[in-house]
Image (cartoon, rainbow, N blue to C red; front, side, top):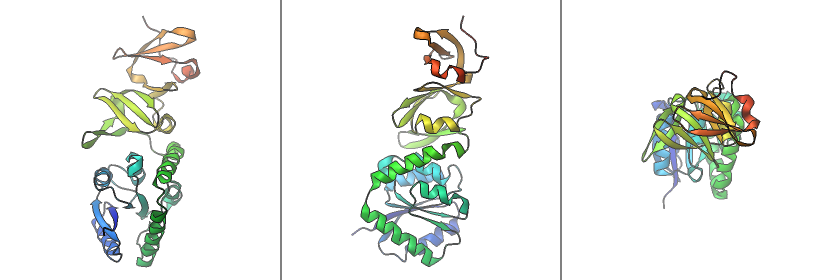
Length: 256
C-alpha cells in the first residue's frame, strides 16, 4: 500500500538531507520528489501530485508563497513550512499551512507537524484548503513585492513573461489573461489580487475587466454613453469606463 506522497522543497542541500532523514522515521510518508527552487518545485508538484509538501519560503526564482499561488486548485497539497525566518508565520497560517517549523528543526517538533498533517489528510477537505489559500493570497497582495514578471505555462513547461511585454490584462473569472507580445497567457489570479502588485506608473485599471499597460497606449477616442476607448499601439481598442477614467494620467491625449 502506498504512503502519503511527500515532496521536499528547499534550496539548501543539507536542509533537504535532514528532512529526508526525518521522513525516514515515518513509514507512512513516501518521498515522491525534491526541488531546490521555486520553478523546479512547481514542475515536481504538478508531476507527482503529492498530498504533503515540506516547503521552504525564501528561495531562488519564486518564494514559497509564489509557488503555492502558481498551483492549480485541485493540485494544492497540504503544507508544512520549514524555514529559518519566523516573521512569515502569520502569513503561513493564513494560507492554510498545517504547521510552521523553524530551523534548526528538532525531531520531535517534526513528528508533531507530521501528526497534524495526518489529521488534516484524514479530514480530506482539499477544496476548502484551495479556497482558503486563494483568499489569503489575495488579502496579502498589497504587502507583497511589485510584479516584474509573470510565471506562465506553455504546454509542458513554465516560463517568465516580463511585465513590460504585457499590453493589457483581461479578467477571466478566477483567472486573468495576459495579452502580451508573445501571445495570450492564462494566469491564476484575480484582478483584485493583481492590481495592488502592479507598478501604478506602468499599469492602470480602465474597466472592471481590463488593466492596461500605459506604455502601450497610443491615444483615447470618444465612445458611447460618455465612455471612451483606449487605443493601443497594436491597434486594439479597449473600453475606458467613466468609473476608472481618473486612473489614467492627464498626459494621455485624445486621438487624431
